[in-house]
Length: 225
Image (cartoon, rainbow, N blue to C red; front, side, top):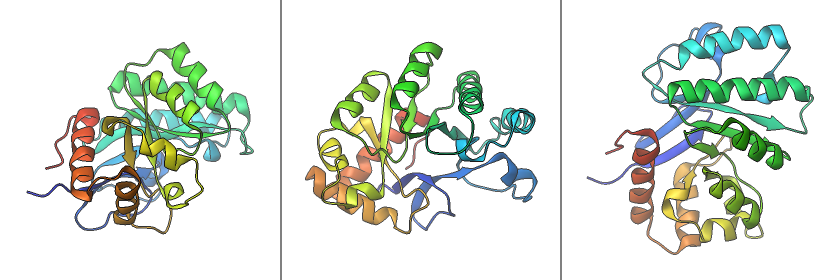
């Protein structure tokens, strides 16, 4: 049996022959009345934290959703120094989601913009035992090494399609169990990301698919085959 393509982080419905983790928010389950999904992650994105009262309600909903049979990860959650959301509120939301992740044993999908030091500091402070997956990684080889040494994995999407992207050298030198591939909310297909990744790493697409399946099973405890 051929290995499926795996898309670790997507905001849209999955394509055929693709195993994906669709990113959702607490409101998707209640306000939109969408209750039937495949595998998904659910979390409180720093862009959409309104105020402390709303955050409290969202965290309560998240505590319920983490037990859903399709929920594989918490997120995307994280820190963003470009968004208008206040820093204290962002940090509170992130720490609470780290603790939900720990209690549930489910990995985190991390959003980070210009806050690498703070992400690493909180990982050291909270001492999580579950993996964190840094989605849409777009930074240096040095930062990649710091994150990997701290117990994180990296996920790559459209940035590897750009020849001058610093992520190309990062991806080229990683072990297969250090990374995942994704499309996020971009207008690209996961097959295109795999094609580019296989070119960068000088390995066949089928070998890459098998490696990603093995990594998926290692992190999420579910066989994609």
